Image (cartoon, rainbow, N blue to C red; front, side):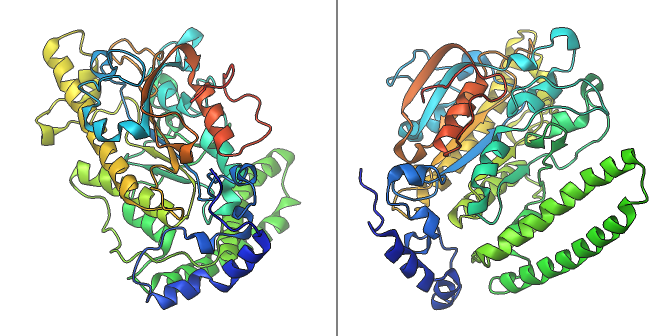
Length: 467
């Protein structure tokens, strides 16, 4: 398929420059949340060849390509999850039935493992490993103080694509209580409560409050006020950062070597904030959605989860980021679900010891999570992208968990879905049954789709998965 953008990128860039986002917003009275418009794409995305567009996290048409990783806790009952037979004519299982309307936009991917989450010599701690290994693919250092994991695949992608958007990546969670220090059998809580890692020792802490996420994306206040409020907040941040950096420079020469190393680690985080501010200023003010700012964390858990999904849709519609993670709950989560008649805790039920009633209740929870995910896919399907396709068509969404059978604490044949069409690059509408491959193989293939170059291996990968 030929790209739908002009053949002369210089002329396209000139026209894009004359149609700034601010001009469009003023002309429309700042009344709607604009999607990424073809005529407003940066010059770099208006590549003359599809291959060049792919290198910039774009589809063959030049529309942005997004990648999302959604994590759910405590595995899934295998008998309720997997379809009966592989191939394009698979029948949706009981657990996945809510996704039937999206058959042509998803793949059920079987046979993917995370061997690094297995106990080995480390013994207990499967829940910490299930979450911490999910996007890193490496064995964690078992300690509550000496934290060592690996950079997660979302951050690998973000390093390649982050300069294209106001936020290199977006990390969200529906865990609004986050303990510190030691959690699962002396593993640091950092492993169990963080999916995203910017380095082996630094998790990217996710945001749990929808209001704060919205204000971070678009600014505080009512529609029409947010851009000015955001600029004022950035100026205040920059003033504080300048003070901190000046003070640190004066302090550095008086510190011992070990303390200088600690100070440098701290300043790395400070500089990353400064870099994000500079990037946001370079790309101009954000688009201002004509929706009310969320009040905070809803009391109803389904509303909370769906609100976080809505924020992801808004972030993609406004091209605020192209890489995101959402942790619906950490592995080992012990939430009850009284809204569907389940008053026992999820993790406790997942150790069902083959009691039929307990298995039935876990399957109800599995279906509940899938129904919320179906809501997300529906919202993406309804939203149009700059090339006329849906956001769902132009996305790649991994939905899965780091535990397979929670009753046995297994980490092989993980419950994994790959949704979205990748802008037409993915083979959808099938149940893909692999023999036994590292989940990292899938991540390596998605990084290729996002245009990441020079990545020969990731985590414990052994090759690439043909998706």
